[in-house]
Length: 218
Image (cartoon, rainbow, N blue to C red; front, side, top):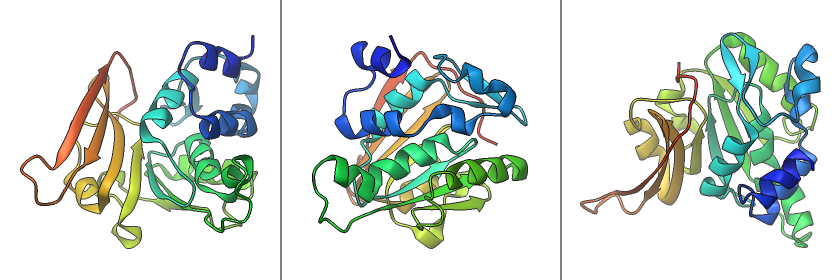
């Protein structure tokens, strides 16, 4: 059984658009040459600079929580290898609309990928370019401190962080649209934050999913 079929059978991949993104965006294209033969392993693998390409199961779970949709603008923090940026790009672009049978809908969305480590930013950007997402203007790479978000492109429909933080940064809360989602690791849990209203006493709905391990957000 293939990795993707296994993720579907075990309930990690559920949404048709996300499943198709996993099928079209090959994990091996985002790994160092000497690691490509391990791309189908369901585990995190090193990509250099002390960082990893996340476990497919974890990425599938986080994307299912995030629910990226065609036409959305999403901030991808700690973009690393560029794999999550490309999966998101597929989900927000015309490719997803074509797959869903909505060819005439002009929405294509945008992904802002932030990476602090220069070598990883270059590595991820080179990998994403294989799918022409940068040339088409669907993915834009920024080298910077992801904890500050990216105010120039705010507000965002959704925010994904693939590295562990101690708490949700205030900048992310401010840069997220009402009704938007943030999916991120805190300690050994994945958290889903849904922004209710800027005026309510409880601004964010918070849901915790424990039992995961991540590299720290730099």
